[in-house]
Length: 175
Ligand SMILES: [Zn+2]
Image 1 (tube, rainbow, N blue to C red):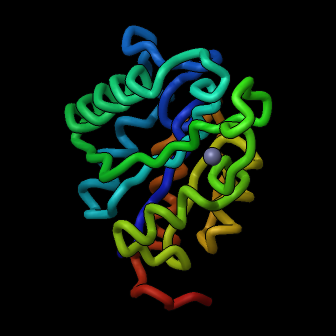
Image 2 (tube, helix red, strand yellow; image 1 turned 90 degrees about the horizontal axis):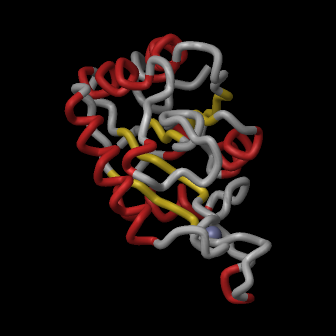
Image 3 (cartoon, protein in one colour; image 1 turned 135 degrees about the vertical axis):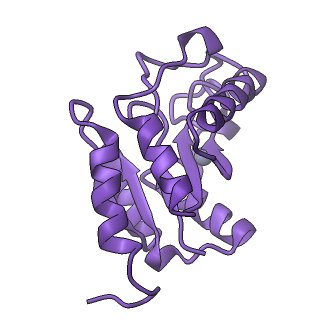
């Protein structure tokens, strides 16, 4: 399948630094409409997110999962659907040596490869969207098309353009 991957923090949801509390949940501008548009177009949506706060001991994996459950519920309410979320819990500055290096923290592409194996995703015909250069680099390393989102713009405008560019043709019809 072809899919759209999103970064989470400051791409889909607002992050003012290590966001994990459900009470802090808020969509970025146009995120709800973007998710609804993708769902209507039958394009599967995945999230790939660095959650180094886990390795730094700032919050627990259970906190993050609670936040993600809420995010998925809110996506559903908005008429969208999140198929799966892959996260990297590691961080180079972790007090725990075993949590420092990995192949999944973006700009590495490990999260994409894990999701592609699990869901049989056609990476070359899929698209990554994120607010940081590391998101774009990770997406490209995974073999996807990759776009930088601008937090001052409406996410749905970018998604609309991406659907027109990459999802209205047959797969592999690259020009
Ligand atoms: Zn990792």
